[in-house]
Image (tube, rainbow, N blue to C red):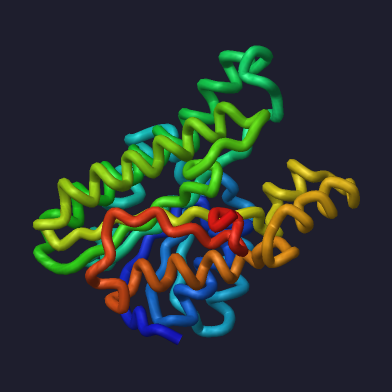
Amino acid sequence: MMSLKNKVIFVAGGSTGIGRATSQILCQSGAKVVIGDINEKEGRILVEQLSSTGLEIEFCPVDVTDFKSISSCINSIYDKHGAIDGAFNNAGIEGPTAKASDYKMEEWAKVLEINLTGVFNCTRAEISVMIGQNKPCSIVNTASIAGLVAIPGAVGYNSAKHGVIGLTKTLALELAAKNIRVNAVCPGFTDSPMLTRVAGASEKIREQLFNAIPMKRTAKPEEIGNAVAWLLSEESSYTTGVALPVDGGWMAQ
């Protein structure tokens, strides 16, 4: 397991699913993790569980759509720990399934506000601290295979995740000379609460998904988390501006 010993890492959207699994992997790799999430109940349960085993993890309630909220959390982390070495910006929602012609404007605004503006808010706050530290830092944003290709019926989600990749590449170029790396992870279909909400209990939908994936299964959240941990570590020190698919071969088709 790669070492992130004593690295202070912020995880936005770390209470459930991919964020939860990643937070645990980061802690087990030696990092001091601070989860920021609007889901305070699940976040505090996770912190209690991991803290009881001796791992270093805290919770900070945040709303990624509110820049003041996220900035306050980031500043409090810096004030307490004296550094922020890495960040995983993972908060997001799937939005409704509908054709673009039927997609409601309020749903469009909500998906983009959380999935794209939320990531922008997080990166702005993180960069404001990292840029003055004069040491290597790493930011990982959650995009999706839906940010690399389109998935019919998900115009809001597709658009937001394409935007996350554009944002990631822009920041990577702007911050490379400052020794701040910015990458995106692009999960394929993952066994998470989001997939459950999309597929429901339908075995037919799940079977169709499995058959469409070259590896014939969905990802485990930990498999995405391991990729994120690598991108946050010094093992990936020459990697920036990448949108990394972790998708069971989906993008190779």
